[in-house]
Amino acid sequence: MCACRYGKSISKAKWLCLIPVIGGVCLASIKELDFSVVALIAACVANVFAAFRANENKKVMDTPGLNDRIGSTGNQFAISTLLGALSLLPVWLMTEASRFGKFLEIFKSSAVLRNNLITSGLYFYLYNELSTITIKKTSATTQSVANTAKRVIVIVGVALALGESLEPIKLLGCSIGIGGVLLYSLVK
Amino acid sequence: MSLPFHRLATPATSLPVLKLRGGARPASALVAAKPVAKPVEAKGTGIDVGLLLCFAGWYLGNYYYTLNNKYALNAAGGATGFPITIGFLQMCIGSLYALFLWLAPDARPLPTVTFNDLAKIVPVATCSAGAHLSSIISMNLGAVSFSQIVKAAEPAFAALLGVTMYAKAPSTSAPAQVKCGSCCEGCPLIAHALTNAMAVLPCVRAGTARASPRPSGCA
Image 1 (tube, rainbow over the protein chains, first blue to last red):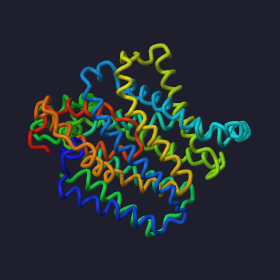
Image 2: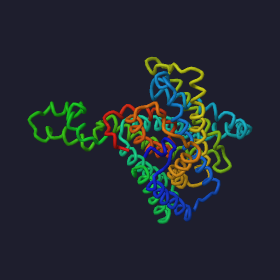
Image 3: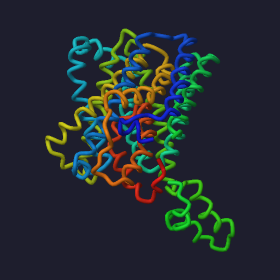
Image 4: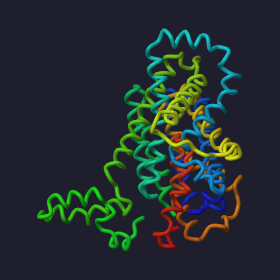
């Protein structure tokens, strides 16, 4: 169980759990009507970043006294968001900054963009902070189950709300994949 | 946290909300039985109203974020639109909110971090921001549900990264029990990261804080 946290080795049972995780994702991709290779790669890149983050985070928290200097979950979160925004600035400057005038035009004329951009920014901050607080308070098993439930709710809910395809194969792949993730989190 | 002796030791005192309810109607056998039954469900961590609200807020917030994010992306032009601008601005909005909470009276005490501390947090923050931006690019191009399914496979990436790039022995500075506590917390936390959460810095601390009542064989 210590494996993924401390980078030693991962039990055979855990490795086996990754088979349905990857298989489920592949299955879900087959019948995806709105499939895009770049979307798949970008989601994988997001996963790599998230995995790096978890490991880097562990290293940072080993710094003596850092937790006390940060003070609270809220502060830690605020610092991370501020530094994250700063780190995105050069990326934005190099890519879409040159078209910012066009964006401003749409921003001024479209209430849909305005409202959804501002609310999504706030929701993003708030739900991440809440998830951190929740995770601090619950046991490992509860976290795994809660994460799985959340994923199902968000995937199905958003697909329904946006009218995205929910083919039986996509649902099956999704179920197998998420079931595998749950098993992976629970198995020793 | 599912310790039998832990539950027996503090059947009602760990749940002040339930204790209050029990005190309001002391004659009722049902109410009296509740404080004993509930901690079993809560696995000794004390699931209270506040925590349930946290759960609800987390789920709802995540749902509405994902939805509004897609609406904003579509409104800005979809595939040929402004995913990076939107991702960047979302982080800026979060930053403004954070700054507001520091500047507002009676809100949050400022951290006392040094420049070196900040420099150490930069990689974590950059990874969070990178994960955020990549997710947005993915959700902008394809179906949101598809991106979410792929992102659910994050443990596979964490596992590969863990055995390839971060192969190192556990630190010897912490006592065995503390390590054990962090371990139990660790894997689900990494699994949690796949839900596009931002830095989960206090997880290690939460693990160490709860390590003492754990039996040593929990991992």
